[in-house]
Image (cartoon, rainbow, N blue to C red):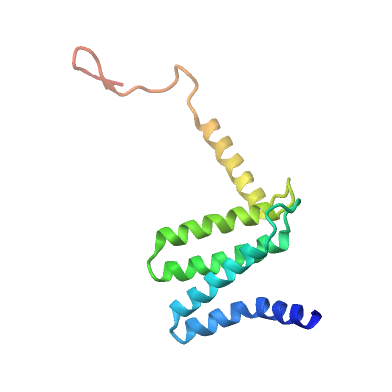
Length: 142
């Protein structure tokens, strides 16, 4: 029994290499088939009622979905690719502890705050803005 589990773990770890080998050999369809089978297997093995959800399973599935999405994108199936990437993103979010923010998220928040401050400091106070347009009598107004 332990030997079977060890073999399954090794297969799961080598899927990325197998996909890479198939793509290198020009068998993108074979790589897609392998990944679709893997996604189905992980989906089946993942207990949807587990609380909290198994983060490792979600991350494994997200990784396989991302790889599959990239292959679909390479075959110009952008809608399918986008759907898979969205699902992978959601799985990654669920795998992270609540309240977790990545360093990239913090950088984006800081950049947004800087833009917001810059924009508000450049705004004209009421009444000081110069209006350009045409008056009711047709004359150019400044």
